[in-house]
Length: 442
Image (cartoon, rainbow, N blue to C red; front, side):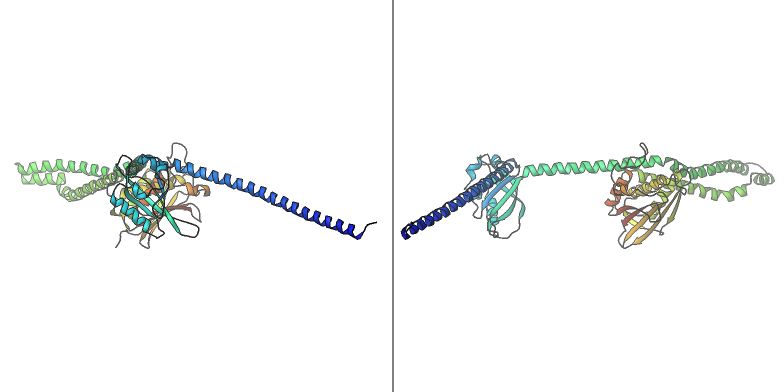
């Protein structure tokens, strides 16, 4: 039979066991937490090592110079590019001040100003002199950016840069590449211009034929008149009686000859001037323009371009003009004539299979700009091609019938003249090219 003392002892033992179980459970929980913390710590450490390795590889592979310093100018980090340039070991620079890196007092003073400046703006392209291990000065171009901690306090500077000689070589190479590009661009423009001129030879020849034929016909007539005048003058200065001279005058129709002579001379001069104008226009169109800022009449250029293209186009291509009497714009008449000829020729090609081959050219002045619109009666431009139309070498024409350079070069010419060339499909059908050019001020 259980006594009171036995029951009390049993209860005490059960209580102690419960306390130990609680302690063991808590220890297990703490141990598990420690394991998880250790795993997380190892993962973060691995991530940190990867980040450090990444940063280290980036710094090592950088060709630009890098210096990280404190607000006091103490060097905290440099890359191999700087150490290699100076001819020193990178580790030997840590803990020194950036003032030790410079070869002259002026550079050290500039570094002091950068460290004392508390503003948040970066400083770019400062030319300073670094000192190599052998004592020689190395000119460099440096960029300085402040670095901050999490609460916005300035910690120091990050300085990057590269040797000035390298920059100058890069600038020279860039300048040469730019000049080569400009030369190539001019050659492309000239080549496309010559190709356009080649396509229009038949029209130009027809245009020249009229005044030359007129001059030739008048010259033949004046040659006959000269023979008759020679006979009559010989009779006057000879011993021919007066009655016979009068009869000869009537026979040779000297009075009618003298009446016709002024008109023949005027016609010949007009034909010669017309020929000269055509040749002059050809020269302006074909030669490379040197001065592209001469004012000229855009209406005259459009009329001449239309005339040349239409003369060379078969199957009745009709062009209607609705233009002001005169529009004066600055630039190159020859280059803008090439633009207009390209647009007119493209309209002629686009309407080749249309029932009506028609191009409407309208012009107006709008807020100091000349606006010229070219609307053809063709099928229009597929929507997927609208964004590509001014791309070099893009063409929808069969092989051998187009280089894909005409519109690209025209776009560039208009852009260099401060204008804009756009294309869309007209709501009533056909393609619509819009040419905008700034006019002569005043």
